[in-house]
Image (cartoon, rainbow, N blue to C red):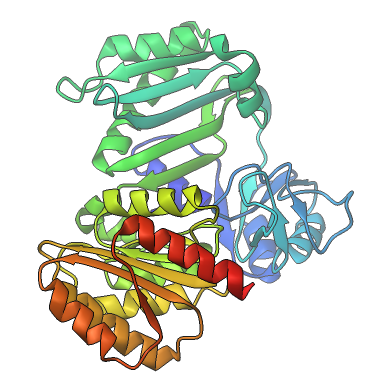
Length: 399
């Protein structure tokens, strides 16, 4: 689960981590009110979307030379003007894709006199089973180019969860950032607090870009992104309450209500499969036959008829779907349960695209009988290869 920048900073502040003063705003008037609470004369107005690259982003509805999603304002009236241009418009960045994201929230912060920008992030390194702290002296909007062109400027420090953050980790961070004296000590304390926040909140990722050194010799988190392990959210109801469903794909949100693993893709053949490995194999064989999957959807091992019905409706709610392939291996999952769900959903939504179903395993014959007697134009398949060939042929013929 992802959260907005202002929410991430609220969480970090609870761990004693320095962040500029700022306030969220949903309207132009709230943005102006937020600026009035700050000392000025410099303000920063930031679009709040779940995507990076906001500073270099462009708004679809504004002229090409208009400013992006992070703007410096030198007066309260400038804040009003910027907020009016940004709210309700679509910001396109390198991470949003061409569709962009509509800006519904802003974050108005105090301006900061910056002496130097750094980069610091933390992720779970599954290769080493450790937390990796990634740091660089080259913070700012071009960190991706730094990683590509000068990878030697990116330093990784791994932390064993068995021992936790140790003093030598902090010294390594300060050394990598080329800090000394009071700033080196501050970097050591900051990195220890960040590790504490990362582990205490069950984060998947915590990125600070930039971490800035101010003109008066302090380290501040100027911008940050945080994501969390969804399986651990039951331990953090305060974090879960920060979820902004308007930033997520509506179909993925609906799938989450039924505990379905669903990810929208760019193809035109909808997939419903039980088991992540089988789902990946199904997507691969669709591509092998010359087409592309429209989604990843794993109904799990113990799905009910209701769950299967919901999954089918979610697939069909995608206008890009021109055909559906159902591939079920019945172990814990029973083939007749899947068949009942398919029939119910297909009748409710008035199925108008080709549907190929491959069933194998527990109660397979009962499942095939339910489909055969449904009165629906369901195309049976003998095996996965047969199923993929049939659905690809059906979609191409319909086109």
